[in-house]
Image (tube, rainbow, N blue to C red):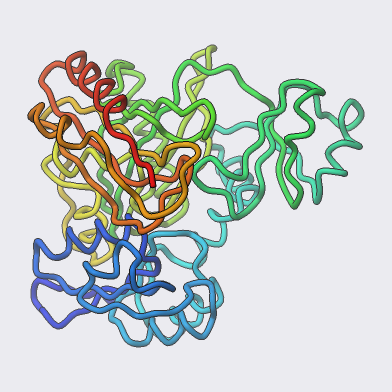
Length: 387
């Protein structure tokens, strides 16, 4: 079994395709252990560029750039799914360690393939219909199984709320997206939950405590995260078992963030998964005995995993760019947040703010989840990102 141990060989270079905030926090975690990282991305001012031991300017969607980068490091991982798949397959064929595996990534980054995989594996998810264009969807309404309300998802390219259209009536048809997509029924839900699982090559699996998520009504991305989830031990165990089955069936080494719906009928459905560190795990940096980033690094190096434990209840709030502003960011209200204590502010270092762009996050730790929620609400009202 071809593995590396950066503790034993300090010259080891872990290559990260993608230089966003997840890459930055992976580099920060690696630096705690004096592990060396290299990052591939287009711009020298990307968040991870200044944190990595080595920054390589290039396009992670370009075959040649990814192949060249992968040959210069000892292990390749990702912080975004859009990495050139053919290059990753070639690197794996050369004997390079690539996590997640290109085979798993090919399934996951196509939402239709991902959903069909879970259906084939007997894991709970909603049914789907596939279409090549919005014109095809319009033709199928009322005749080929599409009824209002429904949800359309582009098969690839969507992130942070983009690539999803919720169609509740004919009036919403103007929201339809053009391109290959899937359509699934709109389901009434009780809660949206995420479970982050970690797995190494030995097959060891550890999961973080489930979190409940609240979404921004306009941007359709996570606004608040709550841990513990408040669902109780029985439901949390069910969600955890589904996440464990998902990461094992996909044969993913590293992290798999599993987003789930709990329906009003009490059933669990997998919404979608991500084979990398995830927004739903940022609170683990301060509030768990191991962060999602450290756990990912241990898993991809086939080192023993740490059993995650929650030290304090946590609420995380995303810091989003204010609507109506685009340009170099200015952060207002951070001083007031820092004065409150047990408040951890993370600013990602993006050089341009845009409406609803993730510019940072704040984690609030408190022995009382209700106090943490109250503080998080205050912080959301205080911190504004303008230009």
